Image 1 (cartoon, helix red, strand yellow):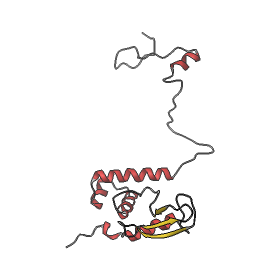
Image 2 (cartoon, rainbow, N blue to C red; image 1 turned 135 degrees about the vertical axis):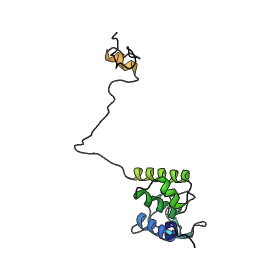
Image 3 (cartoon, rainbow, N blue to C red; image 1 turned 90 degrees about the vertical axis):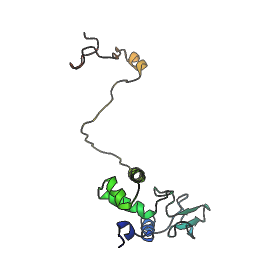
Length: 174
């Protein structure tokens, strides 16, 4: 009896169609010059559902994954989509690697790559009144002794005086 995994339930065709729908809601545009004058140029030679295009304006060729974080990897798109889905369910890397039948090191690379891609796509700009807890500020001129001299104050001692394990004593105290 054949074991059916979730990996077999998601097809490459569905994944590429979802990518096209998310990336180009209305019309396909060139990622190089943003022109809408694009013609279809068949499918990728290794991946049957990966549509190729050519821009009439800049004459460059591209496909569904050009200039995305899913471009240039050896794993099929369905594996990347399922990995992203499992990450959304907060499964551990060990669980995801077992479910997708992948090496744990390959899966670690995939999850790190997806996380950095998600972070770079979602910039956070703070405005107005911002409240922070446990804020750490570096004050003074750490690592800049010439600035300390210009400010006219005594430099800090390199080591604290006092016995180990008995708290710290300020500089110069004995």
